[in-house]
Amino acid sequence: MKNPDPLEKVIEAAVCKYAQSKGCLVYKFTSPSRSAVCDRIFMCRGKVWFIEFKRGGEKATPAQSRHHQELVRHDITVYVVDSINMGKEIVDYETQQTTSGHHWSAIRYISCGSTITRKEHP
Image (cartoon, rainbow, N blue to C red; front, top):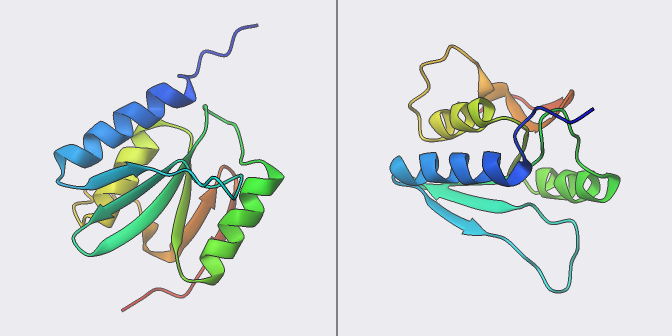
């Protein structure tokens, strides 16, 4: 049976376009010397965060999860996004324009079903 969820590239393109419409800089992230790095770096209003995009319901690979954990240990925000709506809500939160009622502030790392929570920042 065919997966009805949008492809990763469709989710990535929509979220990046949305972030750019909010004034964010969005860069494709690649590293010749390191595999399993996040797909994109987002920068807006003094904040920087990384997003790994996945097709609906998919999870980060073990190598990607290890890389995400390493970033989180350095107080870098990482999200694993598997839907356009989730990506837009994260952009809204990071740019302080959230209206959805979701409370992303306590979540520093989201990975399709598993979360690592950190103390909220003042």
